[in-house]
Amino acid sequence: MTQKNTIAVLGGGSFGTAIANIIAGNGHDTRQWMRNADKAAKCQEARENSFYLPGVPLHENVQVTSDLQAAVQDCEIVFVAIPSSSFREVVRLSAPSLQENCILVSTTKGIEPGGFKFMSNVLHEEVPGARVGVLSGPNFAKEIVANHYTATVVASEQEDVCRTIQQVLHSDTFRVYSSEDVFGVELAGSLKNIYAIVTGMAAAIGVGQNTNSLLITRSLAEMMRFADALGADPMSLIGLAGVGDLILTCSSDLSRNYRVGYMVGQGKPLEQAIADIGQVAEGVNTVKLIKHKADELGVYMPLVSAIHAILFEKCPIPEVIKGLMSGAQTFDVAYSVKN
Ligand SMILES: NC(=O)c1ccc[n+]([C@@H]2O[C@H](COP(=O)([O-])OP(=O)(O)OC[C@H]3O[C@@H](n4cnc5c(N)ncnc54)[C@H](O)[C@@H]3O)[C@@H](O)[C@H]2O)c1
Ligand SMILES: O=P(O)(O)OC[C@H](O)CO
View 1 (cartoon, rainbow, N blue to C red):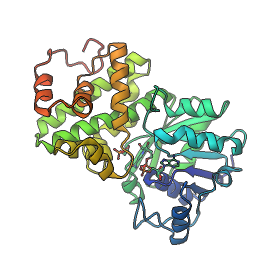
View 2 (view 1 turned 120 degrees about the horizontal axis):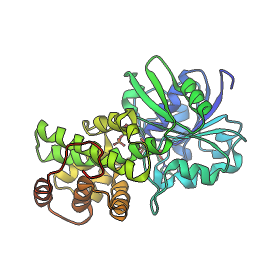
View 3 (view 1 turned 90 degrees about the vertical axis):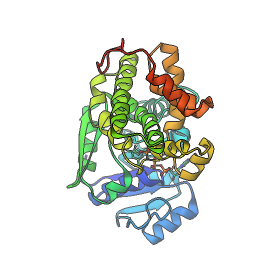
View 4 (view 1 turned 60 degrees about the vertical axis):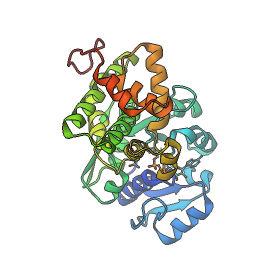
């Protein structure tokens, strides 16, 4: 692939905009697609995505459009930054216009509702024979565009896909590690959102640092146990896309998932909390899917059960905490399936 590529980013939200700016800053012709024609025109003209990242200038190499076919045509690489609930629909619409052999990269940290499919599965199903990668790591869009030193992980079964994405995204402030474990990286990015809801809720009820450490560590144990049961490499969970993103998302109100948990912890109904955020919080749907899968496989995930009980079974928070603290005391081994 040449030094200068034509690259599309599908998604007009905060992460799509951050990724588009990184790519454009590296000299690539970058097209950002958003479905709303009015918003696209406003962003293109104002050179700013005031809806999601106000005050951040769009790089001059970014062209914003609401024409999906025009956006992806002749692109060597297409990044998809669309929430998991609409991911398939957008990929399906773009598929007929994709250049043969183009690389498709998901940045989405979620599982498709109504099943147990990850975004790489959706890409393979909708674009058979596609060269697929996934991008995941401790990456708040707001901090990326503020040029805070940041790292992420690209995972693909094809080494050249990883190398290409590393070249396209790497900058003085953005570093990209590679992995072969697509499933582990995607699973990690989706699971950590659940625990951000848990720690956000814990913060709202005023827990101390002992509790915070307890929650994050036992969240990691659950993540590794679940990964192990599903055949992912548990070691992927102790990298940037796993524990890195877990620490980030569980420690900051920049996280939408953390903020959902915080609001519910303050007594706000879940639907109201989601509406107040006004952006995607993937963890809410992920809790349901993981609880279902963990029950089906018999994987012990007490924190997932607890947050599910609070969000969807109307269980009072103090009762759920009591249940967690009185549960059987087991080994302190991170991902032992006995644990
Ligand atoms: N924001 C971050 O810091 C960040 C970092 C890494 C990964 N991610 C992941 O990236 C994905 C996107 O996150 P985001 O932060 O950009 O979300 P966002 O809520 O800021 O934006 C989502 C965008 O998707 C668009 N959208 C929703 N449904 C659509 C549809 N049917 N067709 C076309 N567009 C549609 C929305 O209009 C919006 O522009 C999520 O899975 C998230 O977990 C986010
Ligand atoms: O705002 P959240 O909770 O979706 O988290 C954003 C990113 O996933 C952080 O890496």
